[in-house]
Every structure is written in structure tokens, then in C-alpha cells.
Amino acid sequence: MVLPVEPEFEQALNELTQSLQPFLAANPQYQKALDIVQVPERVLQFRVVWEDDNGVPQVNRGFRVQYNSALGPYKGGLRLHPSVNLSILKFLGFEQIFKNALTGLSMGGGKGGSDFDPKGKSDSEIRRFCAAFMGELFRHIGEDTDVPAGDIGTGVREIGFLFGAYKKLKNEFVGMLTGKGLDWGGSFIRPEATGYGLVYFVDHMIAKSCPDFSLKLSTTIVAISGSGNVSQFTALKVIELGATVKSLSDSKGSLIASEGFTKHDILSIGQLKLKGGTLESWAGEQTGNRFTYYAGKRPWTLIPVVHHALPGATQNEVSGEEAEALIAAGVRVIAEGSNMGCTEEAIKVFEDARRAGKGVWYAPGSKPFSILGVQILTSHLTAIRSCQLWWCRRFRSRDGPEQPASCLDHRGS
Image (cartoon, rainbow, N blue to C red):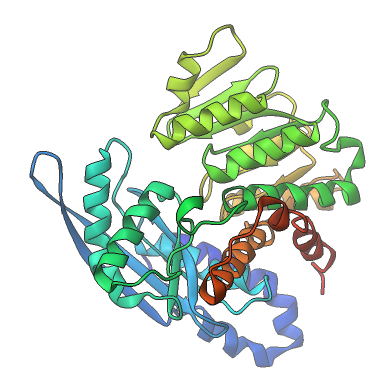
């Protein structure tokens, strides 16, 4: 059920429906299940009034889409970004259902957030917003009902403010939010999990389709978009394996490294991002001519040779024209670390290239890669609720590559 003002949700639904056509043709009894699952069980929308540092009241819209609880409590992030609207949150919540189901764990799907923009706000302003946001949201969430998490704009700082507000309102310390800091209930490997999962999945794709462009070779060129958690840890894992990362981006532009980013570069960018900084400001602080910043551009047309492209920023960040540029640059694997990172036009370009025998392979959505993070969060909640356990970094990362690989091996089943 799609409304005319919901283009992102309509796109996500159309992509899923098209991919299911052969299955539904052979099993028409499941058509009704698709009709039902596409309608959220509950949509919450509310006003969030908070006070800025000048004492002036500000207002934003708050949302929580509790999409499907057939398998367990709703589970999905809270996005804080000016672009947030009901269409985007419905598309994200809809995809979260299937992402969580892939883990084999008892989790439903949901998504929420606000059109509040943390960038340019003081810590005090963000804290006051989070307290006001949780002042309504707390009525609708809980460890057995709905467990939100972080997302774009919602990092450890914001989760801390939200958790503190919830604890004060409910007078209880429970696992009703994931993404917390390590010293107050967080989990090792969670920040890294989605980025690592993406690279594990891509590594298996490469082994099956184009081993000559292995991530273990420094001559393999990887283009990455975004510079948040997913993109940072995608880049770090690629660099650790041995390939060369040539790009990162943010909402203001793209940063190209002529000789590739180093581990130190990525860690430095990560620290800057925690403070709300931009890639442009980071590039301006660097000496030499290793980096070129392109304002208002995405990285896909800026690198002459690209072997693997990993969108990690937001939805619809690769257009049909940019997909053509990637094909011309020699791309072999395109795997989305972001949700619905490619437009429908871009997907058609990649699939046409694959059918034409050009050796191009496209992996849609973040579902197979994100399951590593989702599984860590859910296992962590279970451990905390039962006996206040925290695990070490090695324990959580030792089996990481297996689940994304399993998704690839069973893609046709």
C-alpha cells in the first residue's frame, strides 16, 4: 500500500516485488503475505519541542514506524537528519524486517527518527532535543516491545542522551537501546560490524567472480562513499586486507586520495566526524598533495580506474549516469553498504552489463552485510538481560565472515 508522497518506499517495494515475481508465480498463495507485510503494524508521529542555547523554542517532527513484529520485538535505528520523512522511514523499516529475519533470531523490523539536524548544534542542544524526543518515544518502546538503535546522525553521544532520558523516565536500567558506549552497556565490534560484514561478503563475491581483483592485492582499487561508521570500518578492513581505498565522501562533497588512504587517515577522519567535522576541513589540515576535495560531488565519476565500488552513505547515491561511469572505469563488484544505495536506473545498468558478459556483479541493499551487526546487538541484549555479561573483542569477531558468506552461497535458495 503506497501513497503518492512516498517515493522512497515505493521504490523499495517495487524492487522487492520485482525480485519476488518468479517465486510468487510459482507460489501464488504467498501473494497475500506480501500484501500484508508491506503495511506497517503501527506508525507513530509526534511533535518534539526543545530549547536552543538562546532560550528559543524549536520544533521538529518525531517518528517511529513499528513495521512488523511477527518474529519478535521491533528492531531498527533512529535517524536524525533534515531529510527524514515518513517515506524514508517506511522504506528503511520495511527493509529492516528482512534484514533482521536473515539473522535467524527473534526480531521484528522498525525504524524511526526525526528531521532534527545534529550538525552545528552544541552538546547541550542535542541533549535537550534527545530528552524531548524520548519524552514521547518512551511510551512506545521497551526491551520486549521495540528496541531502537543508532543510525545516521545518531551516534554514541545521542544514544547516551536518549538512554539517560529513558532511564530517568522509567527508573530502570534495561537493554532497550543498542549502540551504547562500551563502559555503560555497549558491545565490542558493534561499530565495526556492518562495514566488516560488507567486506566479508564482497570478499566472497570476488572469490567467485573475479579473483584477479582480490582485496589482498594493493593494485585493486576500491571506491567508497560516506564517512560514517559503515564507511570508516569498510575502509579500514579493505586496507587491512591489502587493497587500496581511493575515496570517501560526506553530504558536502568527496575526498579523493591519489595514492590511497592509510589506516591513520581513516582513524583521524573518524575522530573528526565524532566532533561534527567535514572532509573538506580535514583535507585542509593535511600537508602535501595526497588529497583532492570535490565540493558537491559524489566519488563515482572522479576516479579513472575502479575495481570495486561500495556505496555506504545513503539511499539513491548512485545514478544511472554514475553507474555508466563505473562500468567505463572497469568496475567488477558493486555492493551497497547503505540501504538502497543505487537508483533503479543504476541497477539496470549493472544488470545489463552482467547479462552482456562484462563480469559486473551487483549486491543490493545492506541486508546480507548488516546481519553481523544485528546479530551482535541481539546476542548482546540477551546476555545483558540474563546475567550482565560483556564479551571480549575476539569472541565477537572470530566467526564474523561466516554469515555474510552463507547469504551469498544460499542466494538462490
